[in-house]
Image (cartoon, rainbow, N blue to C red):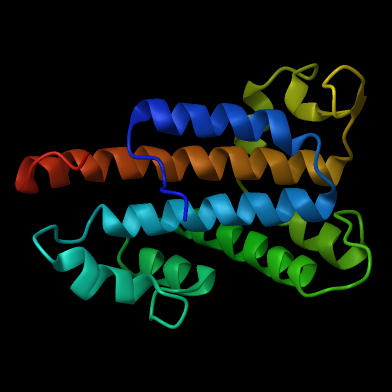
Length: 193
């Protein structure tokens, strides 16, 4: 089982890998990977505001986050983060939309497409992509898909662009909060790493 990133260098390495790989993925792969990263970020955010101490991880925290625990699902993590005011309403809304698309793609045997009418309508309701779209030049690699060798590129669909931009900004927002809360946690309990 892979450990989530703990240091700034590990966050940066994960982001670099993600940006290279996401443009090569199918729509289903993109959604499943993005949702997994966001769910991991929510768990790290929750853990960054929880107690630390001897035996606490095995006795208390791990059972909370097991698949059968109260914080074992993407929905559970999203809802508790919102209820605890760790995320704001636009973040909650966008995470909920991404989760609903992930659920559809994960439980469907048919082709999964961001351009399908029901998915396209949900993507149109994502709020985060607008801010990042104003900051990233139109010719940035984030707007293109690449072949496996990373040489040939083609412009991504509007739906894929919106989804990727929302994912990038949501992930960055959550990672910033994680870093801030970890600093406070380290001051209280000592360094985490």
